[in-house]
Image 1 (cartoon, rainbow, N blue to C red):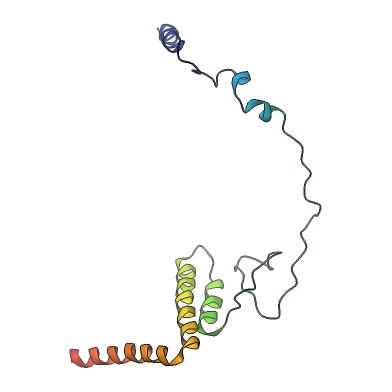
Image 2 (cartoon, one colour):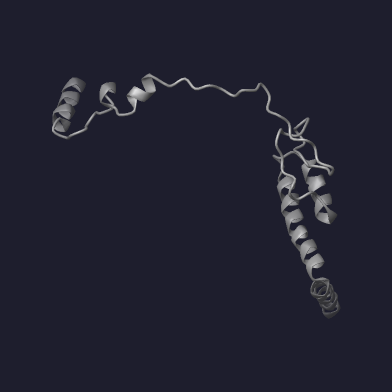
Length: 141
């Protein structure tokens, strides 16, 4: 019975151009490349050259024994955001605390940069937030 169904399916699809193209490897456009891959040379080194260490601390994952061969030095950890990042990188990456501390460090870094850029405006914002919280506390009692 199954043979009749297969024969019937083949007969039904026989007039469709390209039907069953995967059946014959010779009619697949990618097959010649798959059958004869080009040999390409590998890397010219066993271990890549190491980037010279900077004068300031570079944070790395807790799982790494040493820094990766190339690492970013554009934004060294500084201030309260740097402290938060150091704490976050001491926690394994698969923990939510790690990611949440890094997110909080980003927000704190933005506030720190705003405070350094225009101290008077930022001080007013901070005092407004603190004063607003104090005022809300007084209104509730």
